[in-house]
Image 1: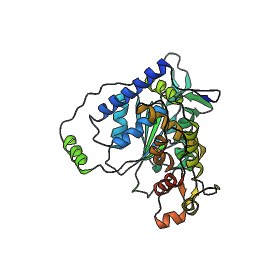
Image 2: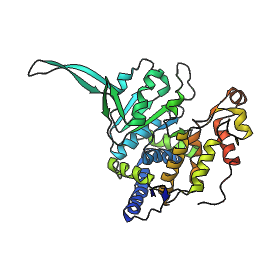
Image 3: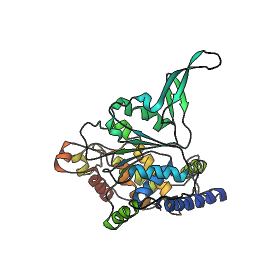
Image 4: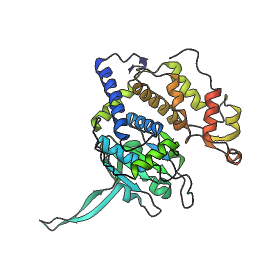
Length: 344
């Protein structure tokens, strides 16, 4: 735990018991998800890390990869309230947050304004094809994602905890879409890329989904459990060399940094923000716990560098014309940024 800037180990019996419960809960949730979801283990790992940190994630994948099914099934397994919002060009901010409506009192006959909550009032919200709605409507999610509250007509309404937003995008249909503003992209902890499964897994998907399938889900983790896990994650200690390594990765992604690699200077327009370093550390803490460790290693940082950084490193026109992706630039960062000589 961290107290007054000094790191001490997690030696509280309560914290250790909670960490064991979190790790066991993760394994059981994965088992329940695999009753309906075939394969996609790496995607499930990243989504569970999102839950344990208390963040939001953007999922990119072509149609038919079970993005919506995965998030809906997750809500069922966790017994959390789920709402799916289909983003379209004519969607209005009030369609997401809710609005005041005139309602007549049956007894008195008097009319008054009553707030009708929108679909954002749920524990897990799926923003489906989020880039198909204009920026004004996309912005309606910003306050909810960052502050877990919404403001309508000057009144603020707090969202029920735990609260998560998972957004999806289709990478192949770009006509009629509105790219997400960088400020909103930065609110997503992970940019998760979902790809076609291997042949054996795809065969199993086809076999199971064309037969009668009615799984019964157990609920190994509750909403209050997730809130407790989020607090526990923040108490995991991080050695200074590990934290500095995460910070160097982020700072080295900026083309104007003094020690930026040549590839970064050549292909990057804007590098990662401070929030990237925060999510690298938080995600690494959660990963350590789910691997049965009570401290963060360099490998934890490297393991989540791509989903944390790929939407925060904005490439320039030269990179686009030469086919250099943000993932390739992250590979270069992991190669050239030196790991501190001491640490865990």
